[in-house]
Amino acid sequence: MHNIRGPCFLMFFILFPAKVASLENGLARTPPMGWMSWGYYMCGDTCDTNPGRCLNENLILSVADTFYNEGYQEAGFEYIIIDDCWSEKRRDANGRLVANKERFPRGMKFLADYIHARGMKFGMYTNIAEVTCMHYPGSKNFFKLDAQTFADWGVDYLKVDGCFIKEESFLNTAYIELGRYLNKTGRPIVYSCSWPYYLKYIHNKHVNYSPIAKHCNLWRNFHDVSLEWPAVVNIIKHYADQYPKLVSHHGPGHWNDPDMLILGTGELTQSQTRVQLAVYAMMSAPLLLSCDIKHITPYEKELLLNLDLIAIAQDPLGIMATPVAITDLVIMYVKKHLPMKGDKIHSYSFALVNLDKFKRRMSFKAEDYGLNSVDGYTVMDVFSKVYFRNVTVSDLIVADVPPDDVVLYTLFPL
Ligand code: GLA
Image (cartoon, rainbow, N blue to C red; front, side, top):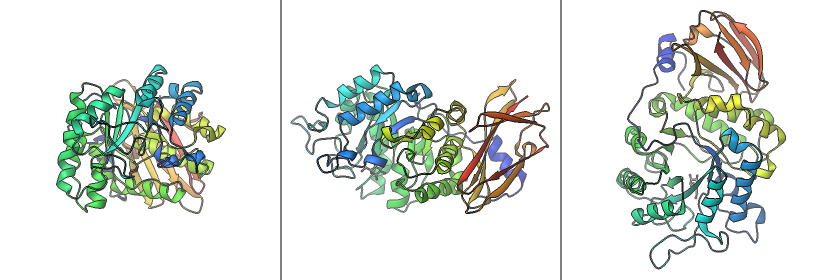
């Protein structure tokens, strides 16, 4: 994590997040939002012995129904993504992947049609090797056919894992090759790559993000989230630490992916839920839930449907907030976003995050972070939606932040 090395250093990142060439399939102009099976259901293929964690057609239909009927789709949650363990163990006589006949009796096209009819999008999973991480058929040697199969089924998002690859050079060519086949199908398919994760953590290689951002819409950089708060803290600390390396590759069409949100699993307190959502929103990270959708609490639902929070997460500029480290557990994130006053004066959000065991008093002055509206700003508390104060750029804004909690303010120019 970078400590304050003087205002110039910080201002550089806040004002000029660098741009690099991106995959121009026109997709994922804002970070994808939706639901993904793995975090909570994991493989989900032992339905007889573990019916509460069964990955099957009914599960996907119930997510689609809940998103559609309860306001999630309107808030922007649109991708419903089936992770590993969805197929038969063998391809068919033509070499095609086949949906598991017991768990997905009507096949994947049926699910895609059901989801599309409700104005949402359908995602699936494969691996770049012969088998997936859970030993279901993978796509190696079948890139062209599998790309066409996914397109024929109406898939809109493909997560491509990278387990079991011996040669790192294969990762560097295979992700590009599979991406080309996806493009050649002519179907718009968001391309999620786990390429950098495997380069760094399995092959111990330095990651060059330029080709990754050029060929993928989003990519996993770090370990899987598990269903516990310390995993979320590790993710937050990792991305704050790696921010200088990641920021220039992050933006519309190409996103760093810190893995799924774990609210709705019963594992987080209300304040921890606020922290994970606020940090992801500030990072312009994908917002992919992984939980039993029926167990989302009324409070969690209120957070997920907080359109002021979603506006930060889905801001069209897609800037990854600058983490200003106070300590490694106390971090203030600063994010420039829309709306603008005229064509020069942006709105900004500040997230004051306290992962420490004790209450922390945190404060900032707008002028120290590039805010320049001579007429000042009106400050909204994003969680309570209260506009509680107008400030000039030199006013000190102070908040007491309890342990494992966040205060999130948006400053709109007056
Ligand atoms: C890897 C990925 C996870 C999930 C599993 C499936 O661990 O990082 O997100 O897709 O494989 O086996």
